[in-house]
Amino acid sequence: MKVKLNTIYNIDSRRISEVLPKDIRIQTTISSPPYFDMKDYGEKNQIGFGQSYKEYLCDIKSVFDQVYQYTKEDGTLWIIIDTFKRNDSIVLLPFDVASKLQESGWLLQDIIIWKKDKTVPWSNNGFTQRKFEYVLFFSKSPKFKNNKDKVRVFDTRQLKKWWIKYPERYNPRGKALDEIWEYPIPVQGSWGKQYIRHFCPLPQDMVSNMIQISTDEEDIVFDPFAGSGTVLSQSAYMNRPYLGFELNRSYIEKFNSYLSETLETGKANYEKMLKNEGQTVFEEQILNLRALKFGRILVKAIQEDLHIYSKVIVERIRREGSQSEVKYSLVGVSEDMVEKIIVQAISKAPLSKYEITPLITYQDKLDDYKQWFCYSITNSYSYMRNTTYNDPRVRVLSLIKVDLNEKDYE
Image (cartoon, rainbow, N blue to C red; front, top):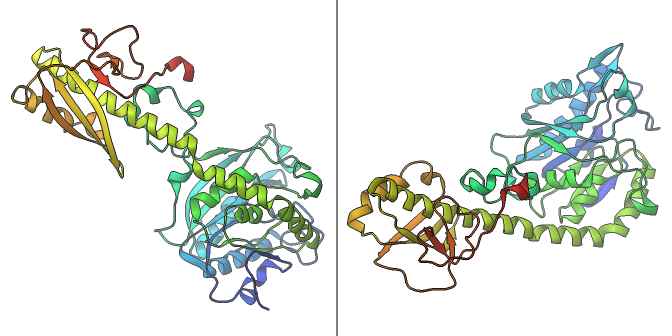
């Protein structure tokens, strides 16, 4: 059998090594296998339903043993799975599966909690509502592809207000994802007239994050339990070749119809996401806040040591990698007076944490430049209004305009 990329095959996932050619190399696998015997998918010899728990775990191990063999050395595996109750006791399915896969060589890198609004019926047998599942993240080797900067949280509505006063504590690309992901389960029927009724459809945004983290364009994405095809449709939108196995023919037929109807829109949404306009705005804000605060701390250090109320002009020059190069022109002091103070200040925290390479110059007096934005010795995140550069309260001057209010982000 000749295997083509961008196809879901109506084949049992236990036959991966019989079907896939030896030269196929998968970058990441994203899958939600059957949760033991919780659901009858209506197919003979299916994994889970009709099996003993021991048989089920052996088959799951067999599937992901084979996935391991076809995965690149820097490749990864995501498994979405949950616990369930049997005989009045919780069965720790995610941890039993993790143990089996570690026997195969998979390295468990993270356990993520997927917090959702809805849950499947069997998890309502306790005194609390179950509103989460587990996402197990494995790698084939210690060095694996990890595009974490592509999925950082840069929406300031989701950040604590402290990013305004303490920009040095925040990565300019945004806050790293934590181990709790909030995504509601897609509403059945929300996929339009060609929607796929499936036992547990995955949120497209969550799958998109997984693909962004683990792959680049043209990397192969695999799902041995393709189901409704969320993983594979999202891969298609994001220019990743995909492969899937699925026993239920009706799922495959509906997936193909759905993908043909949504591919153009899905790709357009992906291109829009790639622009990351919000992330670019946040990055610029953080770098500007850092540059201004760095200058403010410099003049404050001079004031505390020499009791001289100097001013500083701040000018961002360029950024190379993680470092910003910023020009600071100190006004009213000479290099001989403050060189030692400056060296001490920039060599230790907090300034050493700012990732700023300062270019220090000195000048006797200020030129009259009306476009300056003025900041005080205590506030470099909101410019002063109704003032001029020669106001004694003004200590930082710059063409950089920042006007933020902490209360707007509480």
